[in-house]
Amino acid sequence: MLDNLLLVSKQVGVLFVLMAVGCLCNRCRLLNGVAIKGVTGLLMLIVTPCVIIHSFIQQRFSPSLLGDLGWALAVAVFAHVIGSAIAFVCLRRARGARPTGGRLGEASLPDGRLGVLRFAVIFSNAGFMGLPLEYVILGVDGVFFGAMYVVVFNLVCWTWGVAVMCRGTKATNLRSILVNPGTVGVALGLPFFLFSMNPPEVVGRPIQMLADLNTPLAMIMVGWYLAEADLRPVLCRGVVYGVAALRLLVVPLAVIGALVGLRACVPTLNPVMAVAIATAASAPVAALTTVIAARFDRDVTTATGLVSGTTLLSILTMPPIVGFALWLFGR
Image (cartoon, rainbow, N blue to C red; front, side, top):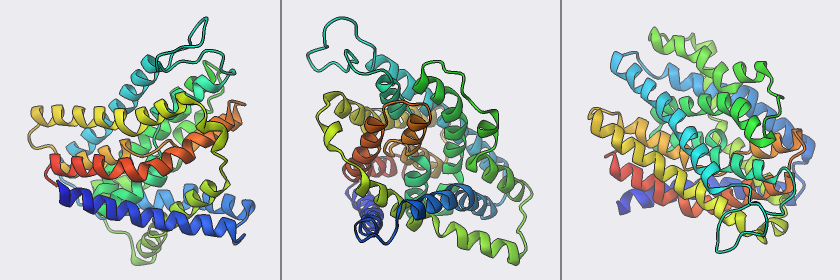
């Protein structure tokens, strides 16, 4: 257990050093807002699909591996379902007086904040934080299963997530649901897995090289935005600490509990799959929280503070949770 904790701590530390480089790029004005938006677009539209495609290319088809992929998809769906249940049970609109006694409530908060808080509990940064950590701990096998979590994230985020954020606003774009970095990466990579094919080197090598950019670019981008964030307006709100605890501790532990129950029913459950899904579930608040909050005129300050604050806190929470999953599933 201690060895696993040290392993994950070391890898998370590596990611945070890269984030520090992003902060330095911000403070020294090596990257401005226009440049970092370009980096974000490169990551989302080019690098992330290449990461997923490369992970599928590295696998050879087998019925058992296809079954594991199906279980990864199912557990990823469950993770978002349980996250939604926890968010709606713990974060309810209070009526009358301001809630007391430590209850997570929403009395007298401006319109739009409750949706942001619930969204933050449900959706983790499975792409920009989850995939890099899965890669450094589990290799391409981890990314192979982590890609399923990213696909479910994208499908649920732009449907149920928008409804949660906007309380029923019908602003969902069908194209963004079906065509996004996760679904495109799986659609292009899945044939290579199903037919055990290798692309020509002139295609496969650039895909691998672009995939290798994911970890440094993603962490530099996150670090740049951390340097921009002003956490002071958010830190004075007690409910934010409760949301951080739900996102970083309660939801991932619930997902690990579900994986333990699944292993009791399916003794041959792939341990790499279990650890990869647990890693994705333990990631901090999704970066898309701020994007969607801004798009639909929600509380952007709270969204930005939650993304930044939980990212910083994740250096303390992810090592024990992921290390526990590594120990539990015998990876």
